[in-house]
View 1 (cartoon, helix red, strand yellow):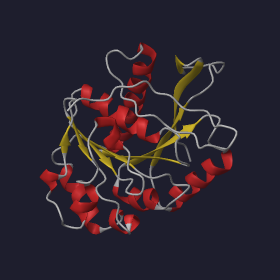
View 2 (spheres, one colour):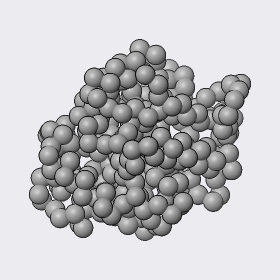
View 3 (cartoon, rainbow, N blue to C red):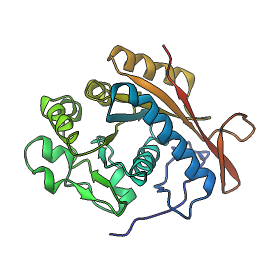
View 4 (tube, one colour):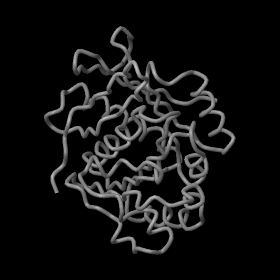
Length: 254
């Protein structure tokens, strides 16, 4: 299986109101240093945030579609794996699955089929070409994603795989659109919210925060991407197609 290693890019919205689309992008040794360092910084911050509770399970979500959460989930998982941790990356977006595209596999065999008892665990896992990184695709799209994700079988599954993996990264649908992430948040150690500079509106962001707080989620921080280059501080800047992007992590404080 050959990985599809393209450059990260965000298409501009056209005059007809075309939705901004996120491209599949996996960091590798040919990726510019600043991009690799951005994900390494995110990895360090996440490890630091989870350390007090020895947490292993991290849920990643956003307010809206195409704000970079899947790219963040994949590359954070890869950064952890490249540091020697054994990592399981799970596509919990059973409405619009995407993680399989990063690795050039299909999504049919995966989480949904496992949760309803149609497939054993060993038939749903994909060993990627990234050492220490396994993928569980979303599986066929079910009629009841939120019920499956909130089920006791999902909880038991996550507790069980903790015995085999150092970290488990869950990519979930946007909180601003469906309740899946909020339902699943009770089974994880922490939640990371991805915010896209210039796209995520403040009202949407606050709605996500409030909904996760009401669900009792442990929000460990916010990952902001596509920050304009004029911003100062410890931003990690990189360039593509004449535009500048960067990443910032902020710890969550009540």
